[in-house]
Image (cartoon, rainbow, N blue to C red):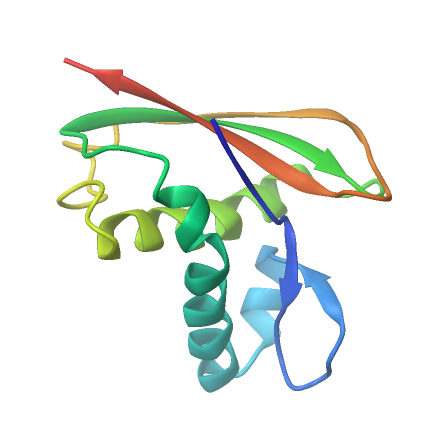
Amino acid sequence: MITVPCTWFVGVKKRKNYLNLNTYRNAHFIALNRSKKDYKEEIKEELRKLGVFKKVKPVYRYYLPRKCDIGNVHSILEKYFLDAFVELGHIQDDDCTQVIGADYEFVEYDKKNPRCEIFIEELI
C-alpha cells in the first residue's frame, strides 16, 4: 500500500485544488503538464516501495476533506498515478492488457490529512 495526496496545485493560482475532472478540464495545458510532473516527483518516494508488475488491478481508498463527486476526483488522480507508475518503470504500459480495471471507494472525511491509499493487486 502507498499513500498519495488527493489535492494538488493545478493552474496558476497557488492554492490546492482537488485533482478532479472539473479542474483538469478548465486548466491550461501548460499548467496541467507542470502539475503532472510535480505530482510524479511528489509520489516518487512512495512508488519506490513497489516492485515491477506485469498485470495489476489497483484499489484506491479515498479520505477526502469534504463532500465531492468522487468519480471526478478518481478519474484524474488515477491518470496522474498510472502515468507516474509507467514512467518510473513499475509497469510497462497502463493499457487495458496490463491494468485490468480498478476499484475505488470513499472511506471517510479527513480534513487534516486528505489522501488516497492505493493497494496494488498483482494479477497472473
